[in-house]
Image 1: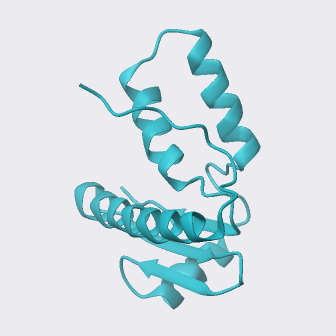
Image 2: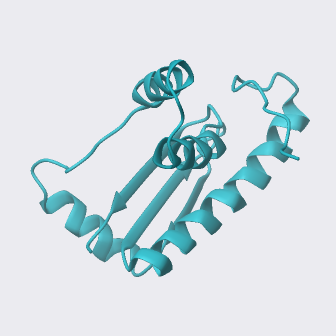
Length: 124
């Protein structure tokens, strides 16, 4: 039996929002770790919370990954919250595929509606 789906919107209660942020931040970092190990890729994850505190995860050296990022003129893929919502809406009107379902599950966990910047550089 699956978990109940929650509506993705800003959590109004400050305490609940902070608890959710802490739990989901850990989950997001764990997913980044798993992706880096399973797919042999470099990942840099940068998170600024609502009070502008910085949290980061890097599969290797953060400075080296960010240097690689700045050397690229155009990313292979770049997404915003709006892009993700469009994908999410589109997949609800069509049959889910394994790829779309996996993408939505990963991204839904990362949409905390705080200042989050995610930089992923993948080399296969």
